[in-house]
Image (cartoon, rainbow, N blue to C red; front, side):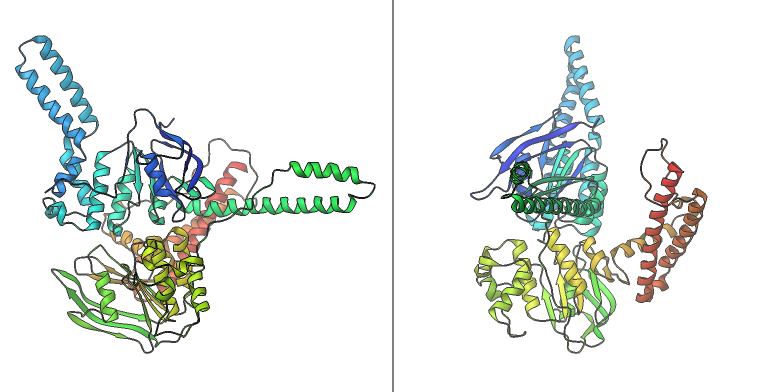
Amino acid sequence: MPTLLLSARDLSRGFDRDPLFHGIGLEVYAGERVGIVGPNGCGKTTLLRILAGRDRPDTGDVDLHAGARSALLSQQPDFAPGATLIGEARRALGEVLAAQAELEQAAHDMAHAEDPALRAQASARFDRLHALLDASGSFVVEHQVERVLVGLGFGPEAFDRPVSTFSGGQINRLMLAKLLLARPDVLLLDEPTNHLDIATLRWLEDHLLGLPQGMLIVSHDRAFLDRVANRIIELSNSGLDNYPGNFSHYWRLRRERHEAALKAWEAQQEEIARQVDYIRRVNYGQLHKQAASRQKQLDKIERLEKPVLVSGPSIAFGAEVARTGDNVIDATGLSKAFDRPLFKGLSLQVQRGRRVGIVGPNGSGKTTLLRIILGQETADKGEVRLGAHSKVGYYDQHLHCLDPGKTVLDSIRVDDGPRLTEQELRNILGSFGIDGEMVGQKVSGLSGGEKSRVALAAIAARGVNVLVLDEPTNHLDLWACESLEEALRGFGGTVIVVSHDRWFLNRVTEMLVVLDGAGRAEVVHGNWELYERLLAARAADALPQAARPAAAKPPAARAEPGKRKRQFPYRQVEDIEADIADAEEEQEELARLLEQPETYRDGRKAREVQENLEAVKATLDRLYRHWEEASEMN
């Protein structure tokens, strides 16, 4: 039975308005990695602060069990003057370092004690401390510190640098390193993936998956939650809902629950309407006593509330846009360096209507490449030509395009776009979830997510046919991200986007420019998932044959058949196994095609092979479940 570490009961919190949340409760056990999701402003960060003891609830209690410690990822660092990176990281191990100092003192006392009783006391203290430090791996504390710092993107050359010289993003990574090194029993992680590139994200995922502690994680990173979380909590104004499994399971299950709840509500509404109609028809006749009885029964019915599925704004950039030339971007031999090479000899052709992602580590030159494409920066070598009739809309991740002194409505009035009435501008803002009194507010008073949507609305108001977006999902909640993805997939023009959001890249892009941070660049015809398959195939090719992973096998049948209804038509197990063998052979052939470089030189062929592989994987999944059912029930 897992150990209960933290529990909360009847928590409510509000700030001079309707409560953020009311009467919620939760429990966290050792080994649980609980993702917390919800719309911006629903109180996710406030909930973590209450659980960490940094804020008090209006009602309710929080308890830590079994001597557990909890710690919250701090967003407000407090460093000692002159502190270095490695010195500040070591401070997280204060208890361990104190125990090591006490161990040294115990060893000294053992060596110098003349009284046998005192020597025995020192020996017992030494043995206890030694066992404690050995069990926690604290004798390799320096290795732990260095491993976590390197994993979070700090090279050894940065260890002795003063913390005061680091950027805001680097400071956030240092705070995350300190929390991981402190090893509390319950980790409270508020947006831990902020400022992390994809390589660092993968390290963090692997690290968290190897920890035995309990975790509560607030994050907008769907791929991160999909890999790390084993339970999802959705927080909203209506309360807290629990979902087992990772993000994908939650995303599917929440829609299924909504559909079931909606059907139940509709059925009840129909029954109520039928009863009301009956009562109305017979109330004044001979059956009025029956009508009164029916009315009493109707009054006792516990009315269901109409379920509401949280969704994002109806973002749109336009399916019909002015036509550009066939080649929207033609870049040849681009090279750029500052203190080191960013990329060398990069050539890129982007045809009309393509959706291209630019990915790479922090500092690899992604934004610089965008600026070169836009003509805002000059390449050291090479040239870029934009196609005829290209009208570019640029989304700057720092939102410098917005004047904080202007109102929201004035911020999207443009001189180089179609002449739009005030109502048309309001309609555009409304489609991005900006409406009502917000339209007249100053930009400076908006939240980060609201500013992002205003900046995107300003681009939509210009009627562009080429979107160039730098980290557009920053500050957006899950539902706004999904709406943006649908809008980009339905956009009639060309999209160039820089992003660390792997879920977004998989859904939106069909071509990648991968910068490795060491001056190399690669063009891949496919999305992020296809690129990861390519990397895995290259890694497998580098292994000896004996070390390569075995092919997947059907899941083993359960030891004791359960009583359940068939989901699939009756078939002999042997027939299903034959189909599985054929599908696995086809899967292996398609996987081999994806490993071949010539596949990636033909964008259409790469997409076709990828689509066929996805279809075969879906078929195999269905066959495995059919095989399992037949093995149990035949």
